[in-house]
Length: 587
Image (cartoon, rainbow, N blue to C red):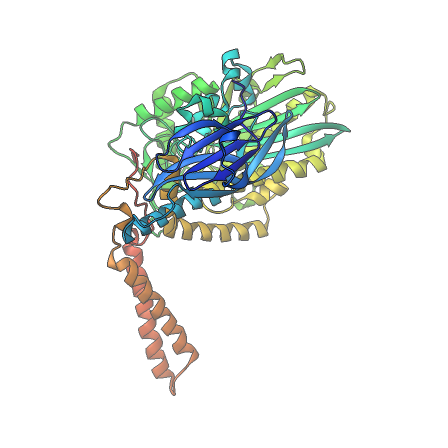
């Protein structure tokens, strides 16, 4: 079986069945889904009824069961990102969610409302930018992993051979994955960020590619998913690979990021920065060792760069991480703590060179992957930098971009693109491309996890901190605060439903979506807004005497401020918490 999926498809819809016709040259296959029995079979083009309603689609994301029954999710729009060694890479930009059922008359009013909410959750996940695919290339593996495979692996379907950590529609494809004969219709989709640029230095043209693969294990949103789970999967784990392609030679440098790998949580409670809580009863070493056992098997040596504050609320996490590394006592793991905010305070971002100098020798030891134009492996990457801050977003991305530039400098010199003594930072045209791409990568990762663009991207884009950048960081921080407290419960539920961490049971007697809110959740915010509004109205419509006006202003002012502090004191009652029952998540 060739490691490709069908590129061109037509969807034919009848009241009884969905027909997905393969339109590639020489193809006669038609994937048929019975809308009543849900049976999936393989047919031929002659089996498609002429009466069917037909439309083009660009891929099958999969199927999911909601209250009303099964739904088919298809890709309806795509954008070309670029070509990867003669393989086209696409971004999926629009989707359609199609019900197997022709009517909803079999549902009660409550079931109808629940089904509508579940549909909104699926559509929310699909609306988050960053779904990528290729019908001819395995995007889930690094160049290094793909170079070390057997002939049997090369003959597997894209779905079979994919790294399941990065197949975001793995749950949606479970029915197709059980039937190998239909695997050419099963399209693995990656979530994260990809950019591909054709660049020139010294008149020599090369392709520069940046890929971030977001793990679907322990996936979620900023404050509801932290630390690790019992299997050792880390929250917000992202594998980032930088690739250079020049004259047939290919070079790759891989880094990872992920939450501090112990059992800890940081649930929103209306405070700007909720206090992180380290679990006092969990077996931290068990999860910690599981995490790094898998990391060492996949990547080799680990250089851990912990960028959190070494004082205040973040200090216990830094101490816990350092203690766990010391207790593990593995010669494959080295730990470096660098207090980013302290070292780079007062916009002294030039002090990042302290960290780069500290890890320079380690980076040279880890190396990078390089294969020549004849397919011969010249050098291997023997390990990775695993960077983290609290969110593994803003501080982490800055450090990763600097480490990647240092590696790229060595690669381009070895390939003969850069002359001896030339510095990458001096190539103004390429530097602009490089910095903007890494800033775009930061924004994509941040939007997927925290709900807003990244902070500190002014430094990534320009190489310096600016006043405008500080203002934009303030604005993004404000938006993050709102989303993390008042909409992230829905976002977390959406991800859990999409990834199969929660499965809808239409026979369930009690819907998790029908859990009533505490009366304070509805009443007190309204009282606060009304009281604050009345305070402003009293100021604008002053009475005959200032004494009377002042009395009204004081009354409504005290009412609004008092209500605000009641809300703040009872913060957990007002945050938008997840409502779906999830698989085991140890906090």
